[in-house]
Image (cartoon, rainbow, N blue to C red; front, side, top):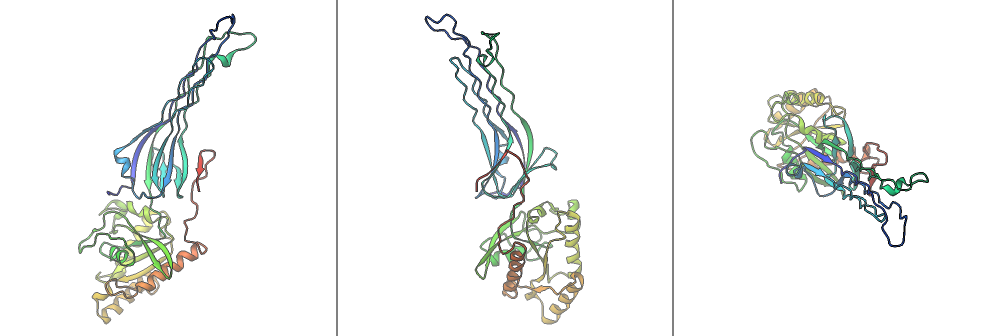
Length: 351
């Protein structure tokens, strides 16, 4: 399945049905009076976060969502049926934004969370509604109110506990494939990873979700390389594992390059807890390993972890370090905290 994390969608709720103008016509009843019923309410447009989805690819093929119009009122005081509502199914972690792409409408971070994006129009009153002591036979009725229409943006930010960052070929995909059952593409050339990958890691009986994103290079925040658009997928994480390849000629510069891109992106990524690790150390002899570890320590201000996915060296310690930060930041629970935007009567939480 192709990965898509952003989509533009047009939505329109249903119009309300028109009220009816009708009068009773019954044998032996001389003054029957008005009996026009009200129109039905137009259908709403809802969005719901569901499990089992991890991409917005469906919205590439269906970009218009329109709810049904309410049925018109009928004689004999019959009210029209309400229009059928439409529900857009999106992955957990999807943000809904206005057409400007910046104004947040709702952030769906829990399975079953629902939000009404567009309310259907109210049905019009039939002429029976307007009967009074001074007007026994009103000959008018209200038309139904029009529904709402708007264009919105859907933006997916994957929900994970820990995120992997680093330059291309830093060993992020190899790390993910080693500690989880995910199978990202791995090859010896830059930008092997073209979209984020998720995997579930287990250590000492506790599970947590890891997110691997495409590598960053200098100028990524200005669109160089793949750019920094995928950094949104690690915004929700509690900790970052920053991998620096031991094959880099200047590991300190490699570390600072990625940190600069995180800072330029924003989203409080620069302030997240970070574990720094020198990866692919199996390619170095003992002397080079110590030299590069010392250089990286000077750049980041603390001793880095030493990892090798090929030999397994340091992998367990890295997972335990990630787990400890995740547990500490969540009060012992790895469930994602509620970050939904407060809304009034338009939210349904089906937990």
